[in-house]
Amino acid sequence: MPMKTHDVTIIGGGIVGICSALSLQDRGISVRLIDKDDPGQATSYGNAGVISPWSIIPHSTPGFWKTIPKLMLTGWRPLSVRLTSLANMIPWGLKFLYNGTEENTRNIANAMSLLCSPSIELYSKHLNGTGHEGLVKNTAYLQLVRHAKDATLDDLKFQIRLQKGAKIEIIKGSELRALEPALSSKFEAGIVTYDVARSLSPGRLSAVLAMKAKAQGAEIIKDQILEIHRDVETWILKGQISNYKTKSLVISSGAWSRDLLSNLDVTVPLMTERGYHIHCSDPEIEVKNSVVFPEGGVIASLMEGGVRVAGQAEFGPIEAPLDPKRKSILSAIAIEMFPDISLRKTKFWMGHRPSFPDSIPVIGSVPNQPNLFVNFGHSHHGLMMAPKSGEVLANILTHNLGNEDTSSVSIMRFLN
Ligand SMILES: Cc1cc2nc3c(=O)[nH]c(=O)nc-3n(C[C@H](O)[C@H](O)[C@H](O)COP(=O)(O)OP(=O)(O)OC[C@H]3O[C@@H](n4cnc5c(N)ncnc54)[C@H](O)[C@@H]3O)c2cc1C
Image (tube, rainbow, N blue to C red; front, side):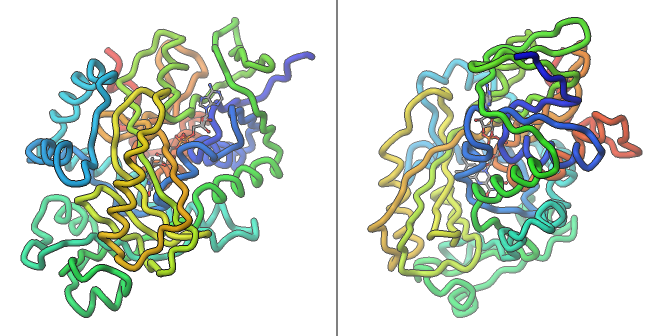
């Protein structure tokens, strides 16, 4: 079969690739999207659904290093590293810790804000006319605090958000119960961020937007790309089922992107930060907001088909099997948060966050690789960053950036 040439081919149909396709189509560009599975059914399927203009604080903040032993060794162990990933983890971890100064935290927050702040409006634009506009719902983001005396907004994380205009308050006792009636009485206070949204089904959101791209003319192909190389003016993609030719190529394959790029001798410090969820389809309680339990490293929320408790961070090889112990850990956390929750019908899932040490993705062109673009590395924030990341990519690809400074998301920061 002769290879068709498209303007742009995107490898990876997660939420980032799908939003990139929509933004490119908005600019009149013909798009082909290739995924080894159905679009949006990998990491973008199982996340916690938070879409927040205010999730702009990187994980490495001043003093974070002091909490690492506790996170790894005690309680629900929300952080772990598989031994087989230790060799890659050490240089990554040093870069991560280096970012934990106040100055770096503020700079990274600015970069994250560029990608997070328009997320709710852009989703409503993308969903408009699909008949599924209700898939993104306004909500509050409630961070639980066990002891009322520990509830404070003095922390740098809240100070940065407040300085940027977030509406955040501390609530206690009856106010907390009114906001989240099924919550355990063990929690005396909560920190509420308003003007946040959540997806009622991240997997269906991706599928609906992929269908929209298809209806607008995108070619969606199920194939696994094994190798990429350049042939004079075009990129050739060798797939498991077929080969493809394209003028411009976007690598947007989430945690799998590093291996595709290394094929071209481009090396980036991307780690696979695995995360888990349990989805309780008959929970017998209601959860009204995105409820964060920092001790357990999870977020609970009511989605289509039940309550989902999602999170935790396990650095490990992309191909390693899931850790079955995480299911009982997440179940115990669910009961700690909501003592009356029923876990009779519970599904267990694991996904792969693509994480850089500075919590910022790479978006844009790749030096010395004509017409090669990247859009990956969205770590804990890919659902909320995807729409604006698609816009930035499409603006760079069409040379239409205007005054927008995108140097903070350039791949150049990792290449010497
Ligand atoms: C437990 C958990 C909770 C989370 N909660 C949130 C949240 O509340 N809010 C938020 O914003 N983010 C959250 N995230 C992060 C978010 O889910 C990710 O950042 C986001 O899904 C990344 O999207 P992506 O498109 O880059 O990757 P993916 O969704 O992983 O998509 C990559 C795609 O590339 C395809 N692919 C890979 N290699 C190839 C190949 N060689 N050929 C063809 N196709 C290929 C894969 O099949 C896949 O579909 C969470 C993540 C986890 C794990």
